Image (cartoon, rainbow, N blue to C red):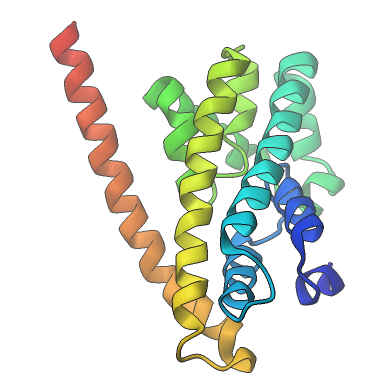
Length: 202
């Protein structure tokens, strides 16, 4: 894993984001932002960084979706409570939290959930359990993952202008805190608008 993080290219970005969208704890901010940082230096194309990251997220999320769709809640919970689940930093409480978020916000949760830490990589599980339309699931996942990766790529590109490479990871972690707060504010506003529109229709 460390070798992949230290030798980022398009296939490794795809693979790491695939893992991040299943249940493997790979921090996307330490993949996409550094890749964009190197893209700013000319070694990669930043648009392709976002594209491959998003495609990887789509594939990883689809794995979660179909596993949940076909094996059901008891098996998902059993894995979450197992030793392997705990090695992936997973437990039943986290899965239940993602289910509550999905139940509260409906299909839009698949989009907004991609922007929320702790929910992002698990939101595809309740989508599968609820037998959400796969076409709609994939569309919302692509939009949400694309938006998140674009934000991380913009941060990495910006940091290239004044942050030395040996300070990159620490700086990303510091900036990431503010980005998460900003995104959470955007998500809250988006959900509020969605709820208000639905109530008016009703």
